[in-house]
Amino acid sequence: MNPTICFTHLAPLIPHVQYPYLFLVIDYAFLICITHSTW
Image (cartoon, rainbow, N blue to C red; front, side, top):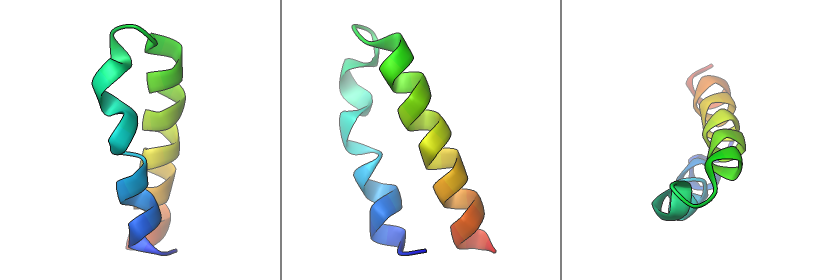
């Protein structure tokens, strides 16, 4: 997978206090992206 996609998930990490559920989904997608890029 393209590593640039992983960095795009890091962008909305700032308002995670206002949107905890959205942050959880983005964090989960980022974890999957990291796992697939390592393989």
